[in-house]
Length: 71
Image (cartoon, rainbow, N blue to C red; front, side, top):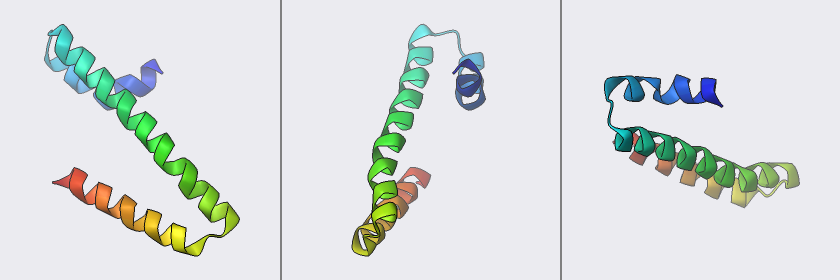
């Protein structure tokens, strides 16, 4: 986990010595990982079970999330 954390938030931790900034970066990384896992579980089961309408809805939701993250 340390290598994973250093890869994604290593620059933020190096830029500041503030403990709260470190905690914020670590918490944001954890929330992003948990959200990704929680979001991908239904998508994977939809693909396995062959629910085409749910696949389309989840694909649109993923595109919307990625669009808003890029803003």
